Image (cartoon, rainbow, N blue to C red; front, side, top):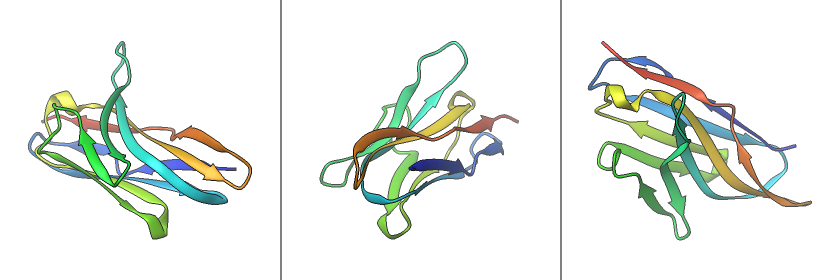
Length: 119
């Protein structure tokens, strides 16, 4: 059974940094287009960053230049380095990926990790 587990969230002051991690476990053959989304209460979940085919990163305009997405294939882990954090970055952050196993390919979500940017 495939699972995605996020970690690294927390409380940080404006201008600070956090690094989120998303570790995938299970009998995984490949992880495709991993990405990070975020959601605040009352709003739709929105894309933050994603690694597209060809390992090309794609960022929301609101985070471009401040956030960096990266992956470690050996560890089945995706990271989101968040710098120059702003109060409007406060949200629950979810990782997402299309994962192939020997039996099937499916879209998976993590359980979410809270990021709060406040002084």
